Length: 146
Image (cartoon, rainbow, N blue to C red):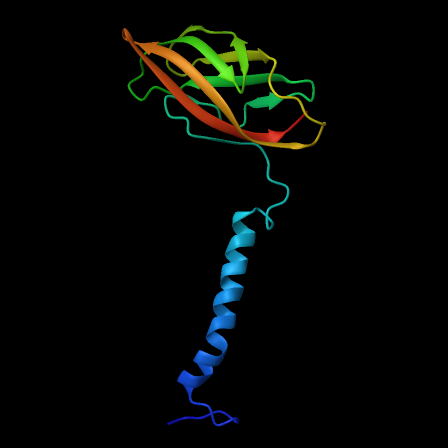
């Protein structure tokens, strides 16, 4: 049996310091999940499938949102965008677009914030019709007020 200078076996050593190692790992994961290790996160969009938003959006510090949504229908069909909302703001710029075409949505009345301050999880709701069937797609955007 191998022992260290204090006469501890490997198992005793792990039992002594194992809890400290686990606590350090848990603290590291918690800090990572809180975004401490990526403080300058850029624009991101999540949750979109039939539409592609990418980084084509902005919200001004006065609360005017602009979102460019592309028809990304996997079957190449035309889509009728009936209504769109960013947060609590109703958007203009809806209509029919073929596959790969884009809508530029302008939304007055989105939440306002200080220029450069971050916003996270702003809900984007797109009500659309494809071949006579209506759908609602939601996604979220994150970025900084411009």
